[in-house]
Image 1 (cartoon, rainbow, N blue to C red):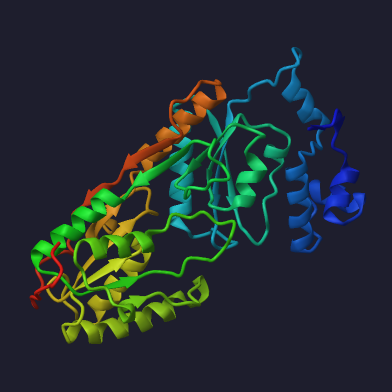
Image 2 (spheres, one colour; image 1 turned 135 degrees about the vertical axis):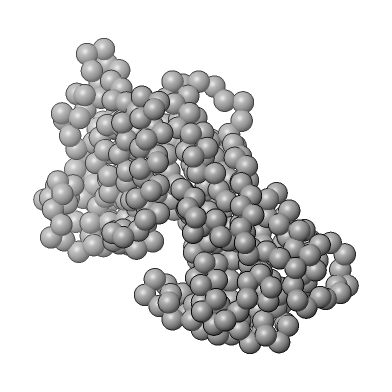
Length: 366
C-alpha cells in the first residue's frame, strides 16, 4: 500500500510494533518461535499499515494493465472461541456449506478461523490475493484489517456505527421468537427461566445480543422472568461448561418441581440442548413439566437431533447465498440501494413446547 506516495516498508511495521525488522520478517514469513503476543502485535501492525510483503503477489495483483487480476478466490472469516476446532462439527459443516455454495457461483474459497488470543494474521488479505471476504467474526480488529483492502460483507455481526458502509447480512430472529413466546402464553405459560452466557463487555466486540432480545420479548409478551431465574454463570467457559450446566440443571429441577418455572428460554441451541438432556436424565417430563424454547443460531445443517427442540432457526443456506451474492456485486462494483439484508429465521416446531401442568394467571396481558 502507498502512504504519501511511498510504499509501506518493513521498517515502519517494526517501528509500530516495537520490534526489530528481522523479527517482523521472520514472523510474517510464518515462523512460530515467538511469543503469541509478539506475533499478534506484528500482524496487527502489518494489516493496519497496509504493508505488502510479497513482490510476486504484487505482480499478480497489478497485472499487465496496471489493474488487479481477479483470482476468483473469496475468504470466509469466522470466530473460533477455542484455539483448536478439531471435533467441532459446527465449524466443519459451516465451512463445507460455504465452500459448496460459493463453488456453485464460480468462486474458490479460503476459510480463516479467527482466534482472538492469536490476533488476525492472514497473508492472503495482506497480499490482496482474494477478491473479497465474508466476515462472520464480531471483532473490530478483524473488520479493520480486512475492510478497505478487499470488498467486504458482514455476516450475522451486530450493527456498529464504525462501519456503516459495509453491507450486513443478518438473521431476522425476532418475529419467529415472538410468535413462539405468544404461543407459549396461549398454552398457559407465565413463569420462565433463562439459560445463557454473559455477553463480554468489550468495546470492540459486535456480537448479536440474544439475551437482551429474549428479555425484551418476554416482557412484551407477559412472562415473569425473575433475576434469580436467569442462569448466566459469570465464569462460563469451555473448560467448565459441563460442571456449570450440571449446576444449572440441579437448580432448575427444584424450581420446576415446585411450579416456580414452567418454561425455559435458551440463548442458543447449545445451552438449551445441554439442559434438555440433563433434565431428561433427572426424570423431568418435557414438555409436560417444563417446556423449552430456544434460538438455534449455530447449527448450519438441521438433523433429527436438532429438530427435537422448539426453536427459531437461522437459515444458514440463505444467509450464505445472500452474503456471496452481495459480495459478488461488490466485487463487480455495483451500486447498492441498501446496506442491510435481513434473512427470515425458520420455525422449528420441535417437541419441547406444550401445555404446562401448572396453570398460572398473569397480571400482564400478552
